[in-house]
Length: 232
Image (cartoon, rainbow, N blue to C red; front, side, top):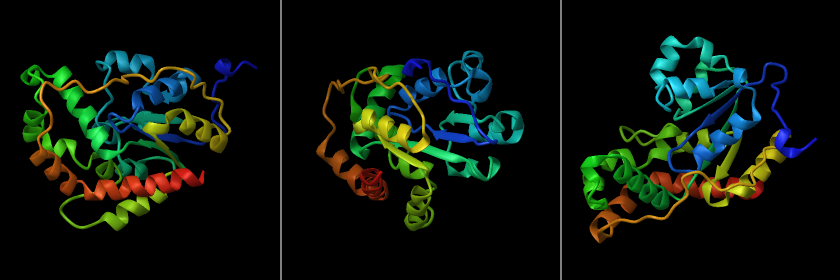
């Protein structure tokens, strides 16, 4: 059988959740899964994306109104660990993470490219307006909240993820994922949205220091993710 022809067929009621963290090669991962799964088995299918403006349904809407989608064998989206109680008890989870500062810079570039108010390309303006959105996103998806010091809980949630991939080692991550799940995802391709930053001004030293201090929880998450990844 040709590798590119392999199709994932769910066995024994198994369920997969891919938690798509923005700017971690998640769109490429979603495209891989979409190509190697039957459309009837996944959310979002191509028709789901088309009818919703190429966007995922928000997590609260999914939980409250779309039980049918929550029963799909493969679910992908910008979802966090709080979705897990609404899925199969044996759901397998996949997440890709990225070095936090690199992810933040890529996220800033995305905002600049998509939102007219930031078309001047100054990353410092984005940081001032979207600081909370940009920082600790990966940790938040794993349950982090600044209201209380719950890093220990977040790291335990990370340990419970079935497979952790790294954006910086995307090809190797897919190879390890294939080995762990017995899959044959064809990853010989260019990553979607891979590009370099092109800010009109550099991020100021003040903002760099502010971010580095604030994202200590996320840095801890990423360090542990690297350790786990090396053991696969």
